[in-house]
Image (cartoon, rainbow, N blue to C red; front, top):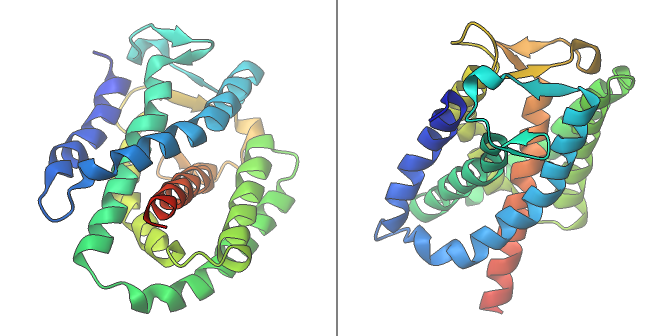
Length: 228
């Protein structure tokens, strides 16, 4: 088993094992979750494949199993399933165990803050394709979710996003070389700002924000259709 697969599998084991908790009974939501994950995974995997072909990023074969789908290692494809699963699990735990109505004010400030920050960074580094696309997408989705769709669950997602930064920092830190001689996932320095949190490019925070926000949006959409 490759190091890459061990890292992402470790992020899934806890949430999966706790999915049968009697209060959350997360397993009963799988019929909403898995369609949401796969719908979002398709365009992100396509994005991943194109950027891999263009050399925006790549993968160190020393830490892979050797199975590829196109130019993507199977571990990378699994990333788009395992990580969103863990994120939505945390989202449901927060909703199930805590009263989160007071967080509506947080969303009021967070939406413009992250949008303006992303737009500024994306514009300043418009010539860096990963920076520009990751930041502009995060800004667009944040604005649409809060101001256009007025999604009440957005505040719950924000808290979830802040909490998942802890496992995210560990997982992405390992993937980007925090604990290995060479990074498992490398980045073309000419396509990113060069600013990192530890070994993690800041673009990854916007990229994951967009991916997870879309998964939660689709997940809540499917749940709402079932209850209406």
